[in-house]
Image 1 (cartoon, rainbow, N blue to C red):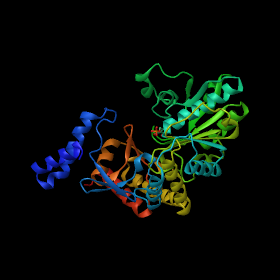
Image 2: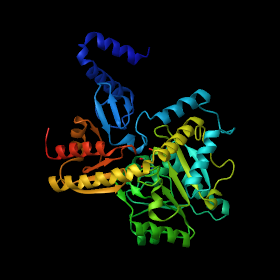
Image 3: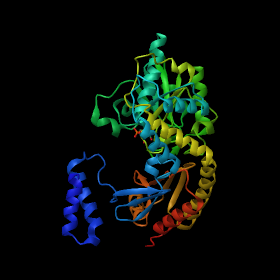
Image 4: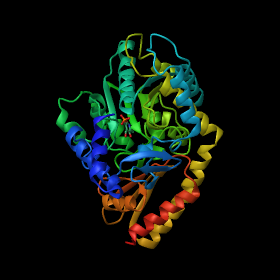
Length: 420
Ligand SMILES: Cc1ncc(COP(=O)(O)O)c(C=O)c1O
């Protein structure tokens, strides 16, 4: 029995049984404050116990509709049969073997991603930041191995590419970099959706441009269609690699398997993570034939990356998306959700704008604090994220139904109208 379980057992003995779940919450919060590095600040007062479909259940027995899906991770919701069976059956076979050897799920997932995309080659990592690290290295390696190093990479202001040293340097937000200098050199930032600024920033040292197609972490801001087309054209004409970060937008989230499909372009390098294995940590770098030459044996690697467990989960996620036609569900329910949110905006005058694509939507409030709205929704049994001071972000599982969507919309309307 662990210390935590012991302590809770003792707590149970002294407290009234009906107060047990509150005691557990207080115990966990106290432990968190004592033992966990304080990077998350004060969290939402929920101790997650288990999940099913689009719902999470707290240790208090309360049910919450998970409209944030682990921040765009729980592609299939919680406790999906195909995914849990795939994980359990792979765990019974082998969880990890190092990359000295081949493993079938790794090869099959790489093959599947190549078949579904522009890419010729895939590399697996363990997170979005790590996938982006791989992409940055691949781009620099490409120019190095050609004999003409071009280390400079242009990214967008207000972008987010991760929390590691190279990815905070790639992230166009000073607040993520400032405490951790000296920062990795070689990154320049230009305003998003401004092709002239991007062109002006590129020079003979520029080896790559790296962009999100929807800036998720800074408030759900989609790239303009014409901008992305112009960036692709400019990069091709000037032999600059185009890296698209689909860590948040990939794996069906925007209504197509990859968001780039909606922009009529193909990147040279693309990264995936969050939704790819439905909650099992994974990251992926996809590259076309030309960019793939940026790595030669020994240039890159990962102990855990491409392990059979994560890759079996990734295969199950893609099989479920395909066999249940979840992209059609995303498009159908998203259109419905956006229509209903537009009605709420009209009725309440409290919503300035709803942005995004598919199941990655930002609801910008006209007035009031998005943190307060998030907490009121939580009290009503709905989980969302609040970005900055005035944006509510939703990124629900791709299985969300119309019925579930309307429940969320009416709860939001009640909160905005101040109804208990
Ligand atoms: C676009 C984008 N890139 C990279 C990352 C970093 O991913 P991870 O937290 O898995 O390292 C995120 C995370 O929010 C993201 O949204």
